[in-house]
Amino acid sequence: MSAAEVAALVVAVSVAMATVGLLVALGALLRTLADARRAMHDIHAQAVPLLGDLRVAVRQANDELDHRRRILTAADSITTTVDSASRLAHQALANPVVKGAALATGVVRGVRRLRERP
Image (cartoon, rainbow, N blue to C red; front, side, top):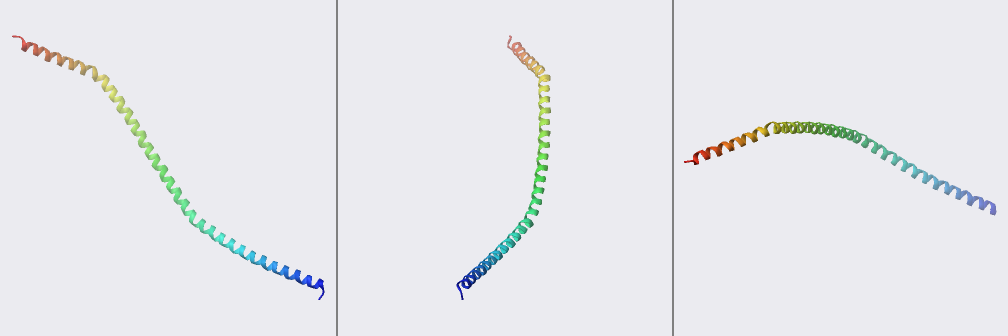
């Protein structure tokens, strides 16, 4: 065998070993991609129902917030009405009550003076 034949044999063996190495690496890569595909499928299968549950929870939270807002609006309206009624009652009754109390005090003092005189 000549040196050229030995060199060609060495190159052929090297290329064959490199090809086998690349095929092994490619097989590992394909297995990894298949595992990744299965993992993505599992994630998708679990995430879709969770997103549906999340939509339901958000819708319920929004409904609850709307309900609370209506309650607060009604309470604010009632507070305003009671405040107005209280102010009106105070304006309507304060002066007569004060006058009535003054009259009662005057009557009591007058009765005491009449009793104290001999």
